[in-house]
Image (cartoon, rainbow, N blue to C red; front, side, top):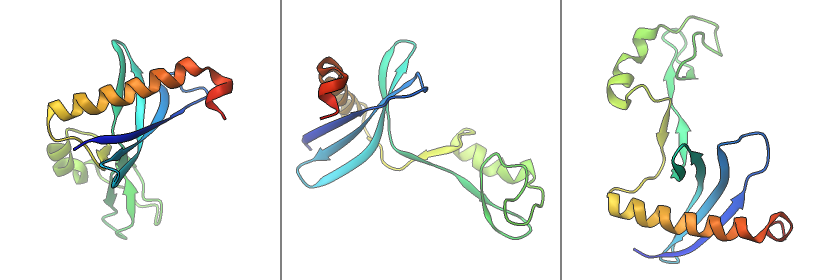
Amino acid sequence: MEITEVRVFLKEGQDKKLKAYATVTFDNAFVVRNIKVIQGSSGYFIAMPSRKLKLSCPKCHFKNEVGSKFCNQCGGGIHPQAVGDLEDRDAKSEHRDIAHPITQDFREYLQNKILEAFNQEMSKGPSESAS
């Protein structure tokens, strides 16, 4: 699988760790958007697009975000025990990747391509990257 296009959109604002979003096209046929470029303690890395997990309210079955103490629909309490099986499955994460590389080799290939495009975009400067 070839990466045929990488587009980087620099992020401006208060978030000091999130630096950019990337859109990657594979084989001129498939696109993945919202891959994040994040500045970590040992350099830049990518985070795949994800969504917040939700759990049903035991009373009204409304889907609430993981970590909520009360239901947004009925106001009933959401018991921490309801999260038990989710914690076992997802190591207490509140997010789940929508798409992600299966192998370490492909992850490194993807990360290198995105960070290369990110560095090129950063070197253009703020006025050129906006055009």
